[in-house]
Image (tube, one colour):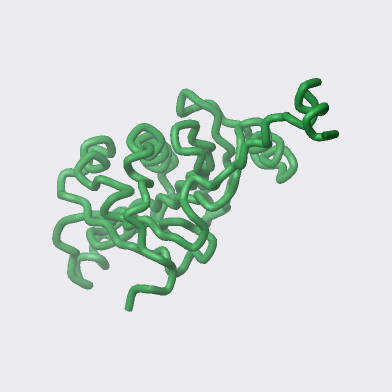
Length: 201
């Protein structure tokens, strides 16, 4: 009877709280072949040779996917590398080296405001060079200050992290990689055709 009276008054009929879900189920990985398109990155980065993609997700335990884009072409011999060092003083990113890495974190519930606040808490840099907000962490690599971009992607609700490979100190290339990741990764790229963590091999 009391329940009926409550219902008549409109009490106890509150809409249940909306249950939030992570963009990709926890412990479910997305294949790199689905997350990144190397041909698109090749064009965006102005690479002459086709890029290949290396899945390095096992080394990034909290990531839904971690994918390295590897420079194409014929790798110089040791003698050619020595000649290059003698001529230019450095090797740079050689064919077969990691050009940049795109890592997606999609197992958390995130929003833009919280992402910005966390960037401030970490004392990293606010950055608008991509045409939208990114959080930039600076790493000293030799004499160079190299950028690592993190951005909250509104389309997927994932956090994307983009960094250069160990021999890549070109912030322009890293920035281009970050912009391409932001522009090309959407709901279709994180759709869980997913592989359960630890299920492969």
